[in-house]
Length: 610
Image (cartoon, rainbow, N blue to C red):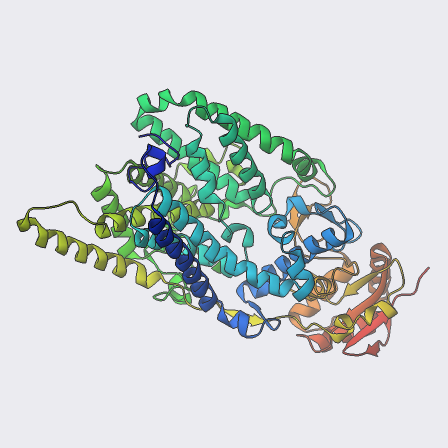
């Protein structure tokens, strides 16, 4: 089999690749209708599960982890728009974590999404842009897989529609969406990257295929490097499996494949040279991760359970089986866990694509279990192969639970191939076999319904956005902030209180603030940490925000707070008094700096200069 198709493609959909006539005008019309219908259907489904966000565009946000990541990504999107309009370097910013700044290439800043959507951010604000991108992440990923499946792997478009829907709406993808992880949920490029990798084996097209693949890789870096790494792992397993299964065919195409791969690597390295230099050698670079990735693994029992955002799931069924709500990547339930290997067995003899997918599913399933295999929260005292693999960079910085996300498109492919076998027009059969074929179709379709219905996503949980004071939306802050100084939000922004980031993102990044929620280097430069390096004033306000209690303020506390304000070059301290524990925060700041001023709907303290 040759042509521009995925390894192991044995369907007849890509007729042009085999030298057969392409579709007729009527066929192209039907295909376009299916494509548009698929896009509309996926978008409608994505809107349905995020509906609370759309009924109150600026008043609701995703609730996972208190909305911290939602606020973070809104700030990322605002930064992208600000870098475009101000002609500043998008790879770095000092609007937060002043005076040190943040290396945006070292964070999940989704520049590849935020920069193109700058007009929307400027017109409607980052809250609206985020919601649009959330829909695009879910529906766009589903449609991209549908497109590749329908063109290159199956002949039945309904089967491709099913496979695409699974790839976009599977529990793991919904979990990443719930966590506002746009860099993980937005995978519309992944099926095209894998497809272009497989096309590298075409003779005589090494340069063209390599350039296209290199451009796709480059763009994916600016959406999410971790997804690109997972895609590379997947392609490696698929290619090695193909070589093992069909060594003669693989040997026949090694020259164009390696040539095209070299061209792709060259194109990507040239285009990414400066961004990658900035990420690893630029200001505010860091080493390692601010957490131990070994703590993030897939519990074996989670595969047969249901996620809290699934129809048959709940918090009670999911608690204890995943690190948190944003990493419920493996919750498929018993019916699907049984159906997938059975489908692989049914397709094994006739479909190389199914064999390759089945092998890759087994590999990544085992690796996702981490170094020590846990079953229902209990240590099985068995070590998984990840214990050895994670000793090799870059596996040492990879969370094994994220490897389970690779299973989603592989299972989606198996489901599409299985449905294609069920629903495609069969070859002529003797009359006595027709009832058997009809029964097989009915039972197979019923099995798909039983396996997939329980994991259909529910409406995503939302919460209220932080207050957005008129003091900021009206621009009044400009009249009170001395030139060249910063605003210190109370509390200083961290993952548990992102009010300041919310204010900043929705004022077109008009001022600078200390604190924030991102990854930056530790004070010694040898490690990584979430949020800014703690200082006395930020620690005090964080404690008051968490407990609602004001500690005894001493003269040493006042002196330390003044030192912090000088370090941050502060001009104003601003508090929205109606926020959670606002009265306690106001009392603490009054003890430190004296009575505040009331300006519109905030209270503020002016910082004396000199």
